[in-house]
Image (cartoon, rainbow over all chains, first blue to last red; front, side, top):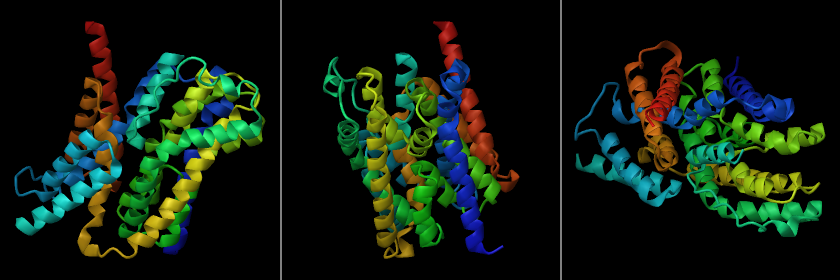
Amino acid sequence: MSENLRIALTLLACGVLTFAIRLSFLALGARFAPGERMRRALHYVPPAVLCALIAPEVLVPAGRLDISWSNTHLLAAACAAGVALLSRNVLATVGSGLVALWVLQSWL
Amino acid sequence: MRETDSRAAQADLVESGEVAAPPAPAGAWASLAAASARAEFLAGVRAELPLLLGVIPFGLIFGAIGLAAGLPAWAVVAMSSVVFGGSSQVVFAQLWGVAPPSVITATVGVVNLRHALYSASLAQWFADLPWRWKLTLAYLLTDEAYVAAVGRLRDGPASPHRHWFLFGTGVTLWSTWQLSTLAGVLVGAAIPASWSLGFSIPLTFIALVVPALHRRSEIVAALVAASVAILAQDLPHRLWIIAAAAAGILAGVLTQAFEERRR
């Protein structure tokens, strides 16, 4: 299978699945509203998934766990987290994290 | 109903990184009592405008990230209309080339699973709409479109054209997302690889998740997911993502239950 076809099919599968999720209860009707237990579980999906994706990029930058002052990715991510808390702005957070990474990498 | 809606609205702050509009004072939507479809649509467009401030830079960043991740430009642009979900698109870009398509699809599905809550919330107002409307509104149903419309739907008059309001917020967001992605692809093509733009993927997630961690149970969910992600790195097919997400969700639910029992 060509690379382009693989991309197109994966995109399509992701699109159909996402659309099905968004249509789910709207199509089923109000009688099938999700229960309290499901609502609660769904509430924790975004923080859990996003933190799972952040952790290895930041703590395992070169294939092994590195929690030290020489881990530039970790320091830059900490800087970005601070900016995220203060500014609540995506562009400011990403920008500050990238600048911090460049500065740290040229220093260390 | 109010309680669960506000919780659903809270969940999407994670994705948009923006603070949802505060509840409107009683009567704020009274002017829409006998509104035409056109008036509802335009009111929806206006309600969406302030949120675009967060959407445009996110779209620019996604466009640039998609190219940096090795996806062809056409796929980056197409993803914004085929998948149409900010953080799930960044996840797709991050996993492309390192995980098989089945794992990418499953992970994108998990990231977008919370939209089922919005779908359930909309069902109480739109269960009787014709199918073409349900399909259209489901396609346009994103965090930012829902947040901008839920106040009017919940507190405003139950007029016959009120679905046009949500259509207005959705179309506005959709067009902005397509244009900003396209701009991001054009800008991203000019950015040299030495800028380590790939690191903006976790930075984007930090921007989305950090301001949304309020409750202790949310912080526990985040920490457990991060720890399991590190410990389970050796699982085949990048299944550590699903394992870590499941562990984090379970930890959050259990912490919340534990706190409520102690009260």
